[in-house]
Amino acid sequence: MSSTQLSRKEQIDQVATSLFKSRGFAATTMRDLALELGIEAGSLYSHIKSKEDILQRVCFKMADEFNAAFDEVKNKDVPAGEKLRLAVAAHVRVLTKNPPAAGVFLNEWRHLSEPSLTKFHDMRYSYEESLRAIVREGIASGEFKVNDEKFVVLTLLSSLNWLHMWYKPEGKMSPDEIAEFLSNLLLNGLKNF
Image (cartoon, rainbow, N blue to C red; front, side):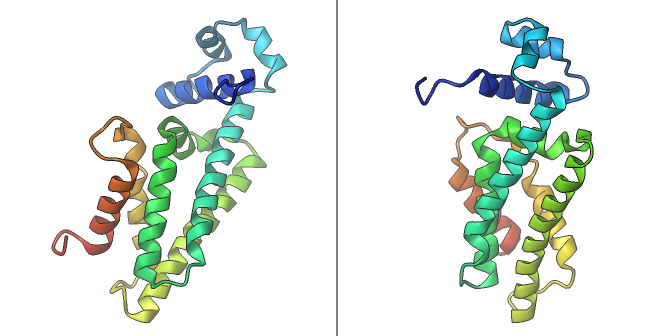
């Protein structure tokens, strides 16, 4: 198998991700998935355990990608503003690498069952807490003039996480250009932009 050729399980995940993003997890059936793949619905089970098994793989793979990208940023010895700019850029790169998977990660995680749901919540909380720590660092140093790091992080993530809805790889801005633009806008505001 060449490096560009996907395994059957990877094909199933890719097609399911696209269907989950466009139709939603709950509205996507195994029959829909089999039809898109051109195989019998029953034969899907020789490759996967369940529809939720696919959702878990997509959600946790994306969570791992966000955490790996952030791990490269969080321990850098730079001022909080630069660290937050780098974190925004890392977040944008993960979102733009695979927009359908980003959409599933951001919108369909609610369909995870226990214990996966708790694990997902814990990973998300940890990621957000790491961002809040950068904002607290900036507040303590006087670099940021805000008093509610939770609100700041929720606003940043809310702004960034819609990216998967409008980003087009063939669009006029590259992921790095989008990251630069958004980090400048979000950290410097409109007046200083």
